[in-house]
Length: 380
Image (cartoon, rainbow, N blue to C red; front, side):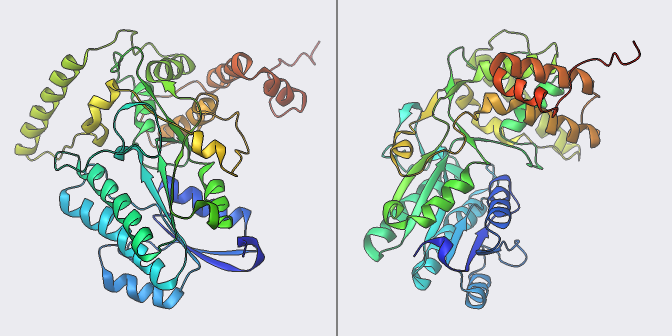
């Protein structure tokens, strides 16, 4: 039965994050007549508490479970294990018991470095992996086991570097944007040809909806949900810099060895501050410094060969930069986190960006008066 044929209930775990929030918004706004969405917070449903889970699902008995919850990427072993792994598998066992589909949001952290990695690529499980990578890798392996041995109906969706709006934490790609806007990045901490794949947070819910409607095709499968074309990290950084009109970073590539030395110095400083009673913490993304210097691109061939069709294939991280930058700059200015930017100047730079990359859309916006870039000569 298709998801649109009857009123159903979906429980979305992790609905307060950027990914979970986008999923909740999509199903509430786009499918309001057909779907009841529940998104319990950690006080209502803790993935660390089996009793919480039992009581919650006995009460609500959903038709689908979507899990986008994760502990922070720099979490200690206990939190990573209990939330990312045990929480994920307990939800899968709930789905088995209720005989309903389970959608699990996974990560490119389970993959090695390299180009055009397909869904069969996966790291070997090893104690040396980060807690986050281990928990995500073990989750995928157990979900596969439950599908083969007990008939779990599931789909695992691997995301690369996620971009989008409405992320209230400064993390991931948004920390990069913040560092440039705050002029905290003096040089390019990456290699000249290092490339990564990117995931559009706004498009993901549409794909999830499609997988729920087509369980026979997507049951027991892993998919990379990424933009078809990877992007050089240096190109992304310099594009943000040009759009903001700031002086830094200078186009000088810092070698990995020098970057590691700098990271060691920051670690030492943080230890001194902690001993002095000052609370300080390394940004979680710096745990993955080596990845700034290693290419990791995910193949989207399986996704493109599926029955799913991207509703906006022209949208990429580069094309969405103006919208993202204006949103986050306004937010960070409001929170007094960065110095003021000239709003008119930013708007003009956005138009120049569209002129360079999307002239037809720019012309349509001007003709429909969604934007009005002209001076007013009525006084003549």
